[in-house]
Amino acid sequence: MDIVKRIFLALLLSLFCQMAIAETININTADKETLMDIKGVGEKRADAIIAYRKQHGPFKSVEELATVSGVGEAIVEKNRENLTVGE
Image (cartoon, rainbow, N blue to C red; front, side, top):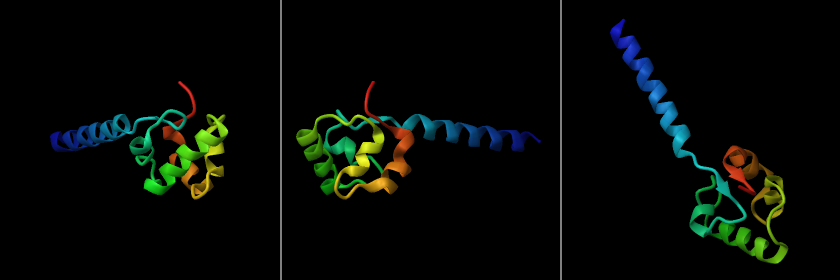
């Protein structure tokens, strides 16, 4: 029974650590390298997000990120919990 408790606690600790590591990314202030931490966003998409911000101003919502060329709704949905537009 002791081994079961240890395995359970190890799994809980692992889950907690993964949740703590997943930081929230502010898509209005993130630099290129931080934007590349978004699942599905590489160098070109990060550049497109920055260009969009320069041209249109800050994002009003996380959903607006889907309007950036090459990003789309699928990437927004995969990352929604880790994205924000404000503090």
